Image (cartoon, rainbow, N blue to C red):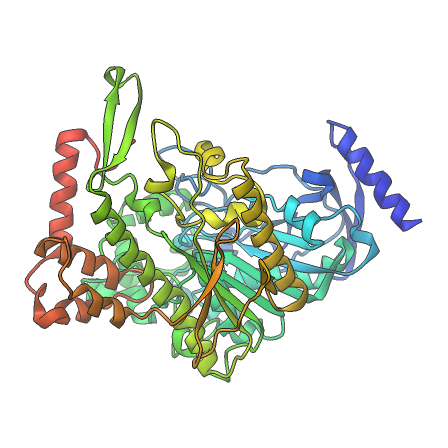
Length: 590
């Protein structure tokens, strides 16, 4: 009878363009309520905009999330645009000049296969990316993944930027319990996970089989939960896609009088931008600041060096910081972990940079420019070093730390697919290739990247094969804790003694390679003669040692006998940018 009911529900949802409601009882705290379900791709059922915590407004700003005070019946608002305060971006899918969003943003979405009522399915808990300053749940639709891999997927919003991560004595001095943290966005993630564990059974999910997965900042947040004592026992598996493991100290997060000139956007500097005297500021005064004004002023502070977000606050993240906590048998979770990066991570930023790319004007500017890479050999070399540094610092180093802490259930990957639909105006496969975030489309089975999504994720045999590989591996991992085999080759575990990486590609090109990437190994490689000029060597060195992880300024100064010690890389980069702006109006092709 249950099976027949589920099939009838799916048929009705798919046949009616008005998307009629399906009421599903679920628990919120000690009460029950109803949420509205909608049709998704391939028969999936979606529940949108379910509140998982009270709105963090007024006195609840910069406090740990509070469970819903009145958890009775709550209908989904069917508002895919709800997002936490942030600047418009491709990640948010909204354009504009000023800050957008609302502090009343702590909502989640759930998608399940049409037969969700028949069994307890693995749960996949998606943490969106965006540098922990942008992004929203509505960007992602995992309907196809849910149906094809028989999983329930949860996506959600969490507080961002200075509303999500903020350290100041006026807030933490007299705070108690979780409110003493400065990692409010992290606490939102943990609360959304807690809500999921309490309620997901009503949506067909198994609360004892939850897989975290997230990309970029989402991968960073996956690592955070692997180290946080507050997340102990709350999940059973974890996937970090293009993550990193950066944490700031509490003193860096405040940075009184900008004592450390290499820290940007510390709370002292943010309050100065708001016209608030930091030393005499009160918690009430801070909570009275308009949220969008806060975001605007925060983003107006130039980010030249290191901007602290996640802090080693001793509440969410142990005092020793995230990298050390991942290596600790006391803090790190001994659960299966899959981590990886993309072969061409940095093309997402470099591919339209005028330093590397050119735009040929067509019909006097009436048509989009025809794009090309100025020096393909230089571009390929630069992208290789920078992207391998991401793997070294964001994949291999965290996996090594987890292995040192005793975790024996580790797997590594590199996403190599680059068979986009090239067009006359742009060779996507050369300009972007296996770019940052490109793998998400293949896990979802749907395009990303907005208007260019259909080129980045074409309807081709290669793309469909890559989708099958990614979905199957992620689905098997959620079901069993192992990604299984790829094209008949068993996926080996990553260990300290045998660091193996599965390089994922389509049409029989996936294969495994042994060996780890290390930052020091890349620095040694960069000492060899290359086509780079002395200045280019220093600029690439700077970007390699200050991105993805805590900046290693000492390595920049000491490299190759101090070759770059007298070169102000930031000033040189600023000069290059200014020259392009004078000539073209922008340093990026548009």
